[in-house]
Image (cartoon, rainbow, N blue to C red):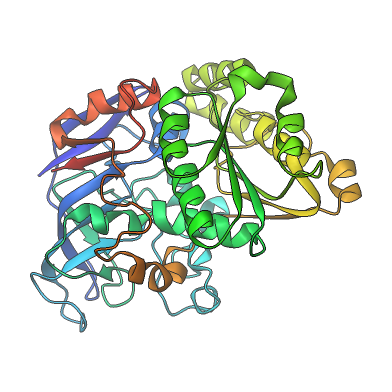
Length: 394
């Protein structure tokens, strides 16, 4: 089959690789019809090469049609249409029963002290072949895939794999009160969708902060009050307080994480680390850090006293300390973590009807064939051509 493979720093290629096959009686095989490029994929593209090998298949936002089932699969049949959550969870262990599928005890990568395995990611998360490919082997066929109806376009449902549940969890963790206020830092796909979900769930004011014109314009069109970081600079906190009676917002979502755009120190650290041999890069990344906590420090500054900071942006290890004195003094609540996809899909599915309140149809700015994935990665990293969310069609 054809699949997008990692070959080195900023080097991904579509190549022929062996077809996946049923390995466990509860597996299914899916013919992928749509698969997204995620901001986390850029971490692999440019930063986390110390934990990935040439030839690894990328991608963790896939959906498609079941083409084969293992002998113990009871709830799915050939021809069924499914979305595949990005975290691989069994649905039956203690953690899954708690709604913490990202910590699944069956697939935890204990060798590296990490949570549930992920599709298309690094050795830290199981090094499982991903979904930017023509076919995907999916374990736990009866409990992991999300069965969706036939008929509507893929874009109606594909974001159940990651974007929708990640944004939904970010808003749920933010715990914005009815009629309350929220700041979203970073208006990439997760920030955009989190802002839409917060407004749908009754927030009175959602403030979106970014420094890319296309992102700001897109959020503004959905009723988000946007602030351009390039224009405000050090006056961001003042601008947010001016909109919230001098207090700051009830909650802040950090949807930035280890993003290096606009942070020269983080960009330099990531560039140096990516060029080192793996044996040197791994301890540097884990202990010295490849990012800075600028967004998280900003979140702490913007949230009102007694408010909540929700972190959905992925961090890769940071040298900066947390502002514990300020956090304690402001009595801030902090919640974070990989999205527990299967914990939220039942809540989200009823919204994916013809009324489309979250605007999932048309959410992708680019839909491209799989063969154009290498160029799409370059453009996405450069934030070029208005690219915010890309779907690939194998």
